[in-house]
Image 1 (spheres, rainbow, N blue to C red):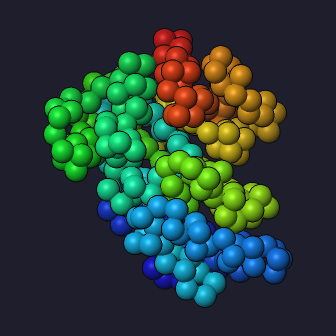
Image 2: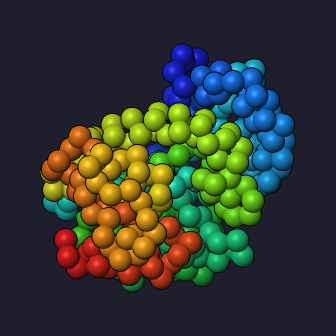
Length: 272
């Protein structure tokens, strides 16, 4: 990847892989913040067995892989961009969003959230090995070969990945690693990336759905309400994408809350 003077640069290298680089000198405002990051780095790296293969830290540059799946094919269905929190290390390593649960079973995102909500139904034999299932899902999403009223795209709000759970899991794990102030700076760069992606993928008939607090607060218009889990559960976080009054922005509970997330999506689907 070409070195950049930007805080964050990302480049899509295949249908799902993003190569990302963070300039650590621009991420941290003080020596104390940088020192705290360095002290926590080894523990973070060891929090998931896939991390050492995904991350490379050299001097003031942090390079890593992330994920983004935006189909190039088009049809008559309105586009729907699903903006998740941040990737799980195991999913990036296996080359597919929500590759599997911790016990190796099919992830709840596919079977307990999207399918019963009516948003997306993929056809496959769930008894196939995980690597085959991941490849089938990816190809079906890229080829638009699924039952849905929408043309689906998947991205993350924070590209910096972390363990799927535990003390270093999720966006909370990223915040633990770099600190609150650095996370806010990173969010600014990520917001620009998501806006550019939405502008390219969505049109006036499309919708953006977020599944995470930081994503909603960063992408909503300034006059819109800040995130609350209660409002997300009740399906009340429906507004417009910042600077795009004709693009609907919707927020549902995080995927770990499968039931509330599914119900909010179902309500959105029925009322949209």
